[in-house]
Each structure stands twice: as C-alpha cells, then as structure tokens.
Length: 295
Image (cartoon, rainbow, N blue to C red; front, side, top):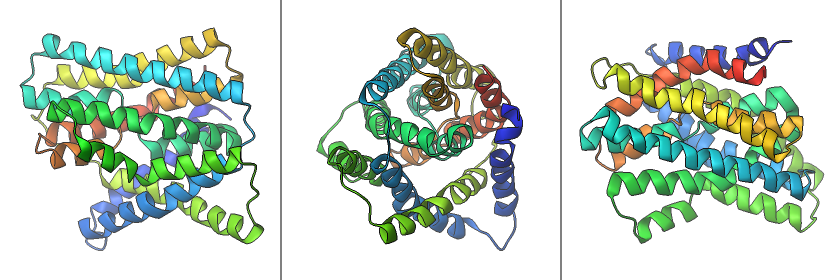
C-alpha cells in the first residue's frame, strides 16, 4: 500500500470534521469540549501508555531526539529569516513565526500509527515530550519578547509534557502496567486519534487577505518542504534505522499545530494569519506528507 493510501483515512477524518463543523448540530461549543477532552484526557493517556511500554533502545532514542531538535532549531532560524525578507508588520510576523516549526501532534501520532504501529507511536511520543517545551518557549518568547515564571508554570502544567515525563519515568523504572489499567489506557488511546483528527478539521478556517501569499508560501514551504528535507538528510547521516527515519520525517512534515492560533489569541496577537497558515498547511500536507514518507 502506498503512503498516500496509507494516510488517506486520516485526512478523510480531517475533511469530515470540517464538514461537521459547518452543521448546526455541531457548533463551536461542541468542538471546544471535544478539543478539551482530547487534550486533557485522551492524548495524555496515549502518550503515557506508548512511552511506558516502549522497547526502543536508548541509543536509537537519543539519535532520534538529536534529529528532532536539529530540525526544530532549523525551523526557527529559517522562520526568523522571513522577517527581513517578507517585511511583515511586527505583530503579524510574531504570530506567524511559530508556524514554521510547531507540529500538529494529532496528525503526527495518527501518521506514526499508520506507518509503524505501537513502536512508531512510542518513538514519536518521545519526540513530542522533548519538543513541546522547546517550541512553546520559542513561540511565547517571540510573541511576548520576554519570558517569565508564568511560562515555566504553564509548561509544567501541560498535560502532554506531564504524560511524557511520567511515561518515560515508568519505563525507566521497569514497572509493569496492570492488565486492567493497561486496557483502560488502551481504550482511551484508541479514541484519541479519530477525535483529534476530527477536531483538526473542525478548526480549519480560511480568511483571504489576512496574509500575503508570499508569506503563506514562505512559512508553509519551511514547514512542509525544508524541515522534512533536513530530517531526511540528518536521519540518514546520523544512522537512524528505517523506522526512526520515517518517524523523524513524519514529525517534520506534519502541518502546524492548531494550538498556534490559540496561543496567538491568548497573547493578544493577530490570530487570523495563523489560522490561514494552519488551514492551508493542513490541506497541502495531504499531498506533501505521503510524498515525504514514500522516500
């Protein structure tokens, strides 16, 4: 089965979520509840279980982390270059800066599950745990031009970070998961991916004129083309095994996180350009992600 057909069900769910969002029965309040459930309960359950039961070797894990950090830092540098090149208004650039390196965890985990099953999910969960704090610090620093204790406190309360830390600690301690607990976590994890993808589709929004198309091409080009290319080259150079290479490329090639819009609004920055980048990037990823994985 080709990569496109392998990922087709996931992007169909995203499209279905966009369709449901435009019906009266599923309004904004409904989707806010779904996103809260996924973010606070379902995805943390998936991340914890994947990491707690992972059998990945430490050497492979460290090589994967090195590639993930390199790709993320490269995205930050390339995104920063857009400031003098694109000549955007400061508020618009500060909002869009994060869109070149933040990643949609829902799409990343769903794609990993398709290409490599539980082992790939465990590896990409490890990357999520390491990279979530890094991308959040960079995004907030650009939006606020400073960092303070509130940022550290917010990161310490992030359910994805907590789940990853606990899962890694559980694994390192060699503790077993009791069968009933493992089954409950498995059921919660099973619900996380489809609901998360539906929520991604429900969040798509297109508002023309909010950002020059040159800027749309710049930020999406970094996220969907430049970063996967860096991940591909770096993972081969560092000697990752085939599954590790696929996971590294998947993390680099997924579209921007929908939480980028929420962060921009919370920081009283411009949200509309971010929403446009998220939406166009998600649509484009339906074509680019299978192409990268076919390598």
